[in-house]
Image (tube, rainbow, N blue to C red):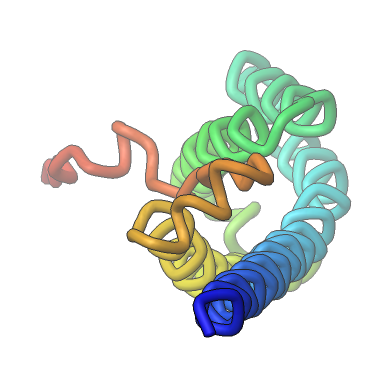
Length: 182
């Protein structure tokens, strides 16, 4: 009788471990899929930047430093190795793109250029898509991180090295108040 009870308890523990492991696998794959979706939109933005820079160059040749910063941030994003490095580089790229559009405000001819307006509209749509995919990514990461850290699933997560995933957070410059001057 004792063996049957011990066998039943062992069976329940094994079943729980398998179910917890499979849930963690599903969640990790969902996080990877969410990052991949976000990555597609970031790649679209990445591909659009050279066209945007070239259009601005024609009108604002003496704004060389800003244009070089945009190109440098684009290269940094492409060379980022880890997910955390990629997320930080994407935030920096977003900040430099804001400075590029600030240049456009100083050049009325550029603001009226059809190609520039089209590129700006495309970039605006891509930025909206990135924001939506960031929310989805962060939601899946939140669920995954809770599952890996909450007891008792944290036992299985620790045994099988399910590591915490980074959230996609905004950069420090985006948190600062915007200065409006007239």
